[in-house]
Image 1 (cartoon, rainbow, N blue to C red):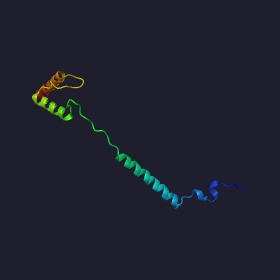
Image 2: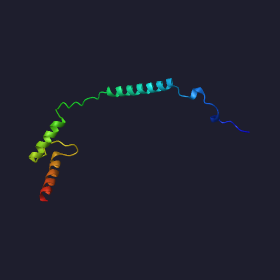
Image 3: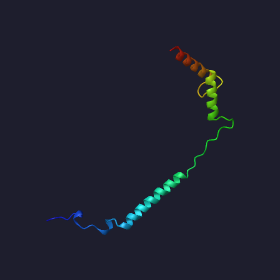
Image 4: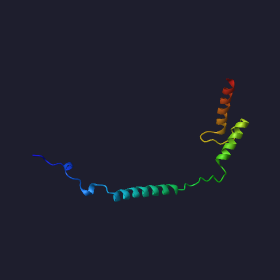
Length: 100
């Protein structure tokens, strides 16, 4: 006696993908991608405002360049160290570089 299995019978009409459902699926995916792309383009990130005391990256770079050319970094503010300590370190490094 042979038992019938699910794959032996005809496919039901509900399991086939007709053209209309395929077009709806593609249109839905396209609409979702378009909505996500437009939402990503509309994000505006806040622009950083410099401090009221005029502390900007350009000013810091100019002060560092002036200190390096004058070979004196002690008046400059540094995070985590003092200007004098950084100046001593730079002077020691400069002396070791010239000795070689």
